[in-house]
Image (cartoon, rainbow, N blue to C red; front, side, top):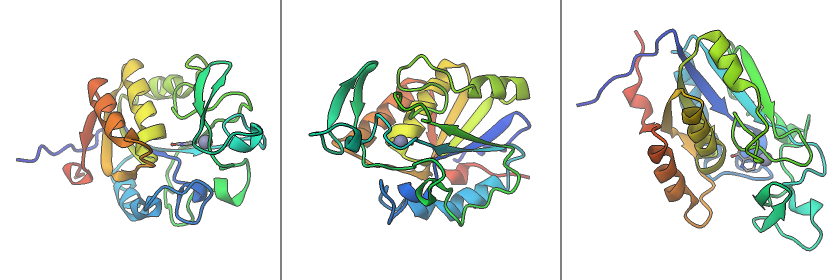
Length: 214
Ligand code: VGL
Ligand code: ZN
């Protein structure tokens, strides 16, 4: 039997990084990344509270392989705060690649939050940057708005979404990840690890058809 979850007043849909660069044809394309857009649009209609996020890097960002001569995308390097995977240049501030997917339709989104804008620190999580210290401010926003249960969708399941789900639990929120409204990069088993870590953190992996609204 399906346990239906009807969005309530303290629920929020958080749409992470559905940007051109993470969709087919983009600089860091997530396989099938754009396939979630119709599902996300339909879901959003059922939520009173919607937030979108954008990965938003300055040129020369520390997570770009191009900033580390001799290194390549998907290599791992040691930065001041620890290990960091290197990526192709992506989601450069105000570029077309950093724009939200043109078919994403979230007219009532109250907040569009950008992350990863500090040149020396990457940020997968929407709560805390990769140094694991620097807050984005989102936890405070959610608390002040009285939003307590987070429905996470977007790109990529095994990076932004997973780190956000785990940090969301650490911040004391209830967290559901709607997996069919996410897509993964899936490098060397990263999706399987992410699914395990999401569950171990006490976040729930679910499907969109378990959400309905009245
Ligand atoms: C992301 C890789 C690099 C993400 C951001 O938001 O999942 N992944 N930058
Ligand atoms: Zn990034």
